Image (tube, rainbow over all chains, first blue to last red; front, side, top):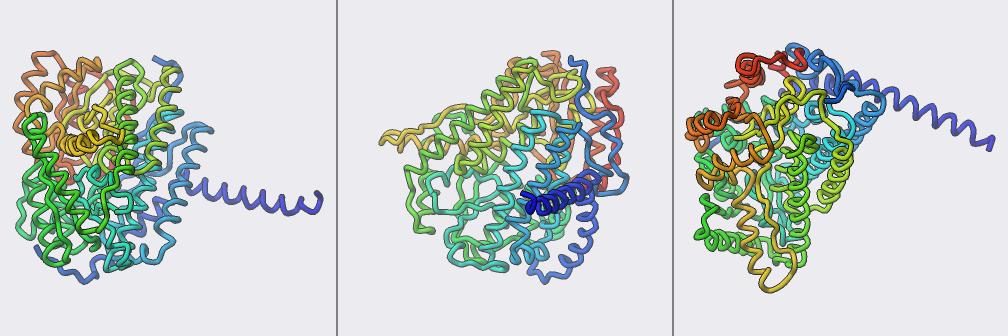
Length: 55
Length: 523
């Protein structure tokens, strides 16, 4: 059992870190703030696409 | 009325002037916040798993302008869950999460078959393109055929995600001389085709006559490109508009037979009766659930209402049509949650002041107005016009008689498609039925969306007013332009309700921070 203790400790720490980081991203809406910054980048590519625009 | 506060105070304080996003997500108490967080994580994982891990989908992300709107999926969920707690929050997530997964799969399949992106020719041979307003009940007997709607992916969903999603395509359509006064939904769909921004795939396509001049115009523009340039044959399913008349039903059933024969011819697949009746059972179960939710809404404790009812019904009734078992599972989950909440007499907001029926075609760029009405003014949107579609059970046992009846059932479902059921079919289904529904649901208010480009409804304006006056119903007109927030902004929509509530009703808002919101630039 003792040899599993460090592994369990590491797994718990990793799990908690994952939770802490993702919860901060969730609560402070960081995902939406990042994707809002990506929008103009994508617009740049859309304007460059060669299109056969017609009726 | 409950003494314990439901929902956060001052929900309007998280909006940021000139920004796409809000400052933070809502704190709903420990249990509900952790639940909401877990669903947020689940949705991101799903979107990565189904869409973002595949290189072809990344390629599509940089090719199709409408794909940028999918960055705002979590924001859409936040808008519709605003203020919700407990079972109501869980009902909303049960619906939204299954819809998100379904749409992610739709995108993945579109790009798999797209000649520009994945170009999987074998897969494409089994794809039948269906237009945005085509009831997928006509595909209920084809288990191996893949019905896909390019318009749902490129215009319908994006406007739910981002209020400005369709503006570029509306402008493109008008640059090419299409009229500016038609419904902006089909106009934007035509714009996508003109702008060469629609995936090209499939062995054939089925379009329907939907409901209006704009739709017919758009179908013409799109089918011309598909048939003459992309080599995709198109079947025009012309469903009768006077759908309550008995004498049109034989014609309607024949249209369905013709559509099935067309799909069989082009896919090489045969109509499978076992699969059809399996889907029919699921269609009936969905109808049964919806009827039970509507029954609850007639009581003082509605449980599945507002956008929880509207968005899910639109998807389940029209786009799913019993084909996917996961939606039956979701129906069961929602039913269980609704029954639990109903027994406990749960409320979805702190204060219910008015019971409203929402009628007309709702603003697509502001679908979450229903949640706003509840949180800001305590107006409970019990049901809406597009959720009041088919209520009859279809034949679900495989017998020789029922195989004949099935064609009439599919025709009936198609005729009662969400957008067709009330906007066409005569005076009774649009006007008379509304007042019966108001009485049945014990409502004291009608929120009447006036989609200013929808000629089918605008002609009835005076008749609605006359009858509301006679019956003493508070009728609130809410003008909008469906897909184009430049014509009436979200605040312009809210102001019409604010003005009515303050001047006619003489009331103060439940949450004053929601009355005026700086969301002009928001997704």
